[in-house]
Length: 254
Image 1 (cartoon, rainbow, N blue to C red):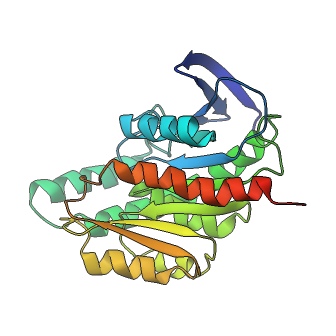
Image 2 (image 1 turned 90 degrees about the horizontal axis):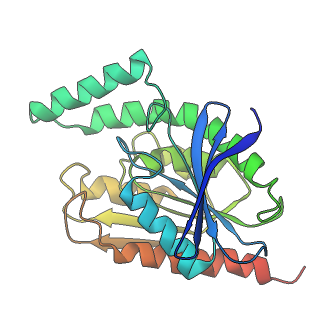
């Protein structure tokens, strides 16, 4: 894949925001505005139908930068943000809207479509990580985390399973159907979010995905509420989770 190019830069409230491209991939990197010391990197996956600068992404990134001192990178998934949709994307999105309008379950369509998106997105994330680690403020030996819910989990599970540089992950809010077998290969620390009253994902399905991870250190965060009602304080918990695992890697003796 091509070289990473920064295309825009802004700084506000101690956070440096840099848009970038890597071939056809569009992304954004948030960093502490002050200082050039190396810091851990958190890769963050956005949800379905959103994009790299969706308000939830910006809010989580700012928490991770302000409270954890991390770099945070998000790329647009295929067919999302400014990236063009393929005929297959259009077909699956139309099927999803039809099921929603008819009051039919969305899960089978979302699972199928997200699995196909993951096949396209994981190689892009691997190339993006390679390019980001060439930056002096990140470095090739720095610790890396992954944070992704909903579609971010559909892409994140195969990414984490394939990438040994990722040392900790926050995941959740997805069905196990296409992910459970892959989750069995994941042994890093995992924090998993689940909504007890999720109208799309039965709680048994969410629990099955959590159970599938082979990690000896994993925690289940269950909150009352529907699919889109995940409490904002879970973002604060994610910052503490990454601080425990990624900062520990930074300060550990050689």
